Length: 273
Image (tube, one colour):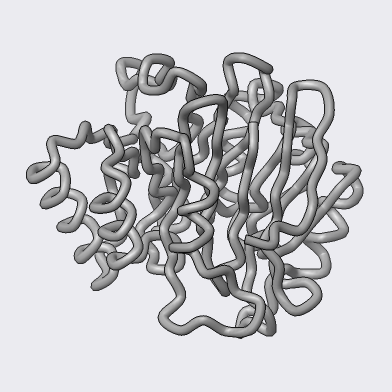
């Protein structure tokens, strides 16, 4: 499993590739290219060469995760088979625009819509037939905990079927929702690589979460000198207390990170694009 966490400023754009398939998680495209930010279009051309983009996962509808221009660019150029997104979202201008984009694109391009809300036991948590290379296990959102757009985020483990390597998608999930997730799923959360929730915010992680995820590597997606001062120092301490390796896209002046997980080891390096 190859995980490309692209430096796009204060937001997220991740590409996962296997032997033949690829999946994109979130679609922020910077309005202007600042120093150190990856030129996403050029990076995608290299990363996706020889791969089939099978799906796009939208972890949340805030505009630092779901950029209208970004999703249209990805959908029109690479034509994935499906899009996964939270069923319920906090009504905002950005969310409404992006939700309409999903509906329009699904209709015009015959995309399969995977709308996620674990409101009862009949709602599927496992998606094992939407990729040749990857299986997906969903832990969130749940309608009872959709108290904010952040807590409506998708939490999903991606498993490469050939190697068993795993990557945990976390969106902007905050502690109140994590408490429920941990209570319900415990060690099922175990993953080799973890995307830091909410760009390394203090209210996105606890020692309990880290105990059960127990990742080898944590990757934080945050902008250089961002207004929110992500990642938070206390959050970094929590990550480093439980994970041998912690990387961030905003250090030193911004970097994209290429992580390779093979089910046995995890290695990360700066991705030059």
